[in-house]
Picture (cartoon, helix red, strand yellow):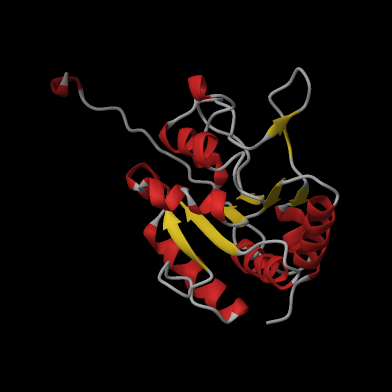
Length: 212
């Protein structure tokens, strides 16, 4: 599958940041833009350029988890089932709390490229304000992974808590993304359709007095 222009741009910027000494990259792309394929193509380049040994992906649901595993296998041509000989694994955020020390030891033994889909599900700038998933990332991945790629389509949380692995503009709660591909760009590129908004008029009829 040929990369879309935004995917190529994002991969180029990520590789440039990684090779300049930075380890965390946050990409914002509108839902349906192709974040999974972009991340898999980037992972392929990381492995081929010997910037990482294995790839581990975390996502918020088992459906997305399977989709990521299948896309990684298709793009890279290696198994991603976590078994002996595979190039990595795709897991859910929910599984983080049940992973044993042997698993987390991989981040110290190997150069792990960690991918986080919909990173806004994981909150925390410190252990004090982190949720369960964000806490695991801070404790076991933030400083141990050789590089990380965080993906999101909605870079905010309804509870206004900080998103893990993210930076914010000084004195504001505005997140700083390394790459942004919004809905307007996706519509322009015919990647996504124009949203159809239908106005519904609600008619309220007064009830007779006997109903009160």
